[in-house]
Length: 144
Image (cartoon, rainbow, N blue to C red):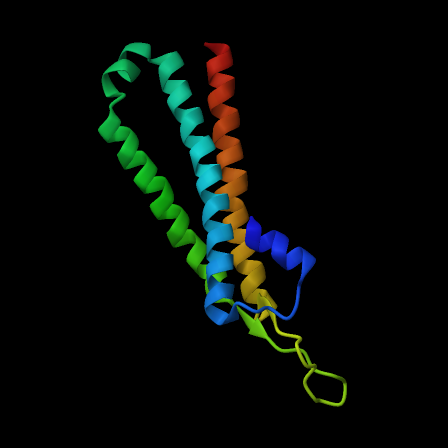
């Protein structure tokens, strides 16, 4: 969040360089995905606790919770890599072809169709699919 706020207030020049650009993008994506997966996991755990209370009591261990957390963060890091890899530092140019001094920004540097594809896939995996799963689980809990 601090890097996003900094970029909103002081968009260019991006002073952190390519490594800072990759870090900012990876951090933002990873945290968003981890939040979504955590909420989905909590909903699944809640479903098991309500529909199968004895099973939930037996399976709820510290070790299992740590494995799930590791899996959530591991998947979040892995799925943040495609979007991170298409970002980089971009220098802006005047219409005559000369570069604009101090105009470096951290932005998408690959073709937009690649970015759009990544956004569509991650939107399905981290919005539509979790929302559907959470909705179904809560409907089943309500029926129970």
